[in-house]
Image (cartoon, rainbow, N blue to C red):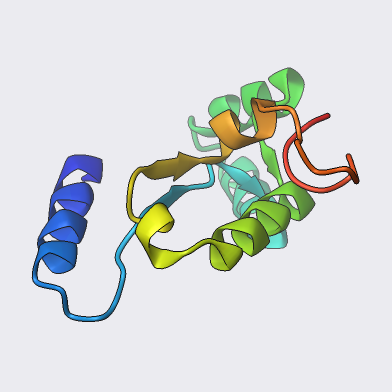
Length: 108
């Protein structure tokens, strides 16, 4: 699905329709909706709850606040820069911030 999405984005950008198409991969975001889903799946004793438990134990979730910071940064980019790559939260969060305010952007 990701390859198809990226291919479609490249096609849209090549047609120069005036709407930049990029790709953002936030990972599994810790939201109320995800927590509600896990609670319902747990109540039904569904097997994929084990994966969510592992994600919690291993810190695999993307914090909602961090994801929002990244989206803010992406929205501030030029369209030309945004369409150049797939933007993955896991990569962005691991980069040291170059901003003089280390609370902004990736991890300091």
